[in-house]
Structures are given as C-alpha cells and as structure tokens.
Amino acid sequence: MKINGKTIEAARRVACNHGGLLTVPQADQLGIREEARRRLIREGSWRRIVNGLFALTPDSWMQRAWAGIIIGGSQAVLGHEAALQLSGLWPCSPNWMESTHEPPIIVFVGRRAGFPHDERWRFIRSSRLGYGSPSRTSLSEAIIDVGEYWCADDLMTLVGGAITGKMVTADALLGELEARHRHRQRGLFTQIVEDVTAGTTTVLERHYHTDVEVPHGLPVPLRQVSPTGRYRVDNWYKRYRLIVEVDGKATHMGLAASVDMERDNFHMAHGLSTLRFTWNHVVHQPCQTARIVADALVRAGWTGEIHSCPRCTSPGRNSPS
Image 1: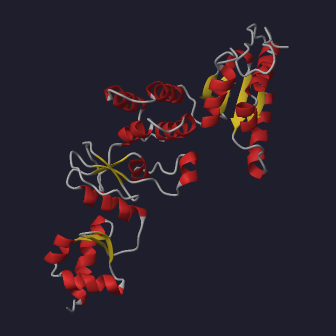
Image 2 (image 1 turned 135 degrees about the vertical axis):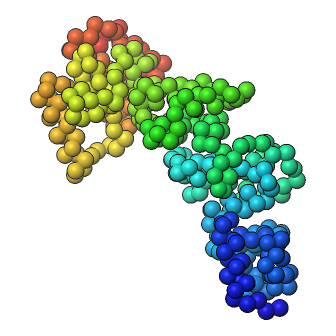
Image 3 (image 1 turned 90 degrees about the vertical axis):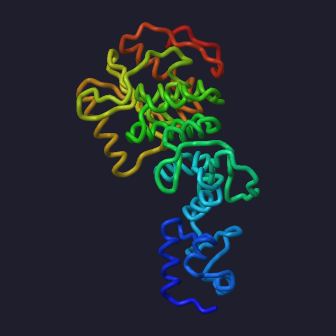
C-alpha cells in the first residue's frame, strides 16, 4: 500500500505534539493501516516502541517520557526525577549522575494494573494531580518524593537550588511534607529546609554547620550576609568581626583567585578577619577546622569553650588554645 507525502506529513504533525509518537488509532484515523505501518517499520521510517505505539522521530528522553504517559493511560502523571527534569532541576545530584546521564522515568498511573516490566519506565499505582504537558507532579511534590531516598548532600543541593532560585518556597515544601502520612526521611528533610531558610545554600555550607560548628559548640554565625554592603560571605561572626568562607574547590586559579584576594583585602582594610576552608578541611578534618575557628574567635574575645565530638581523635579540649 502506497502512502502519499501529505499523509506522512500529517502523521508527523500529529506525532510532534506527543514526543514524536503515534498510536494505532491515530494512524488508522489518518488512513495508515497495518500493512503500511509494517512497511514503514521495515524501511526504518518508523520504530515500534511497544505494541500499538510508534516513534516517527529519533529516540530521546522526552520521547520515552511521552511514551510512559501514553502507555500509562488517561490518569498517567510523571513524577520523581522525571518531574525534576521537566521543571529544569536536573541534573542537580552528583550521586545520581554517577549512575545515569538521564533521570529515570517514573509514571503514576492511578489504579490501573498489569503494566509490563520494562527498564525504560517504572509505573506506580497511585493517583497524582498532573500539571503541564507532558503531565507531571508539582515541583514541591517531586522534591518531597525524592526526599524519601536521596542522601543528605544531594537533597541539600536540590532544595537549596529550588528555594534560592525561587522555584518553590520553604512553606510549600513543608506544607507538602505535612500532608504526607509517612515519609522515610521526614526529620532530615525538615532540617535541610530549615537550614536553607536560615541561609545555608550549599552542601559544603551545611557540612560546616553540621560537622564543624554544632558538634564543637561554636557560636552561630550569620549566613549569606554582607558585612560591609559590598560582598556577601558564607559565615559572619559579627560580634567577633570574623568571616569564615567555605569553598568546594581545593584551590582557586586565575580570575576566581583574584576575586577572593580582592574580597579578603577589602574586608581586612575594614578590620575584618577571614578564614577560608576547602572541602577537605570541612568534610575530612572538621575537628581541626573547628579548633582553628575557635582559636580565632577566642583572640577576638569569645569566652566560650570548644567541645569534643565523637569524631575528635584526641581528648576534647575544654578551651581553645
């Protein structure tokens, strides 16, 4: 059976609205019957995704996401990492990126059952409200969903990026969490949202708070503020005129190093001291880092005492030296 060019073009126009996919009923309506469909597949013009669903364009993540929606039926809604991808928050997790270059496609399908096991999709029997095209859960719902199994560092990156980027509010996340009867990491998730709200915006800043500051009894600094109105800093011990900056890179080179030096010199000229720590200092040497900060605070007038934490390799010191 010969198909004219107008019919093929009409099929492409229909498919372009759904990731380049065409269903059997749509093909029939266009007059492309089974014999013609088989010929198009043999020629390589079409590909069979699953029974009853054909691809007219090259394979892509978006095409597979649309396929999940079509296979899932009228109540299908994309969720979890797939919803993050569609919201522009993927990739946001180094750990996930180590295992895959694309997010898994998770589809909520209402109460439907009987879906085939296929590594391209994971179908979940649960009803969710959908937004946009292709239909996906709200961003706050997607963040809460992955918050059940992502590690603390990845959640910090995700939540910090979403809130500081004004893509979602802390109230929306906590409200969505409150509506859940069960959540495997409720305490951790709540703490991360509170940390971000208090000014902690990156993974390393959170490590400084949880591994250096809190377990060693250091005073609480102001976070993400500008002591002089010119530069924003990570941690500002206002009373002691001490700045603590944390940087994920072991060293800065070129322009970045020049900017750091300019900032530090400007603050020094205004009577402010600056300590800088890398990932290795904060994550792998938190006790030593805490003692350095404590010593600087004591010299500036702090009368508190540094505490020994379970990670300290030597007996706790009652006061910094």
